[in-house]
Image: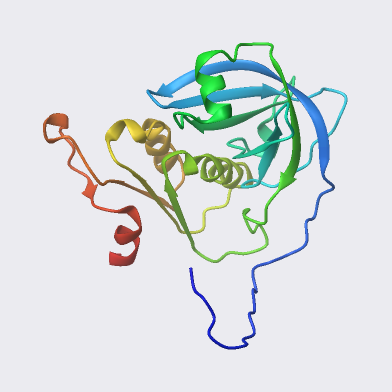
Length: 217
């Protein structure tokens, strides 16, 4: 955070208008899978009679009964929704959190939630061939997964570096998926980083804070 001491002018070059119309719709829980002790992977079925165009990397708001909102990035590339169409969301349990307590304690298959989206200007720039650095921590991997899927679908082989950080190895809850993506994508290099590896876990990868690894490289 910075506090200006005088009048100043800010220029935000990355801000761009939303390309898709916002849609509100009901979504149904199709599947819940605990990918780590504090990470739940939700597969949510979209209405089959309503289109939902979005860009890989964007997010949606889940609207709770009291009107409160929770934002989660979609971990599914647009062309991989399937039939019936489903998006995947990755949720970390925040103890005492109104929504995640509910998800981890009582949410079940076929429950219906309300969603609004797509939102956000973070997405794959498909008209560029410039190299990419992808940086994620914990469940921030969700939109990165969608971007990598989209790159695979496009045959996009430009150089890309994926840095994914966590405290312990369990925090890299889709580590095997990322390893397979690196093998399948000639331009991709995957760098997992742990800040607090367990000594007897056999970890031989990078350690420290993930943003430091990016800066070092």
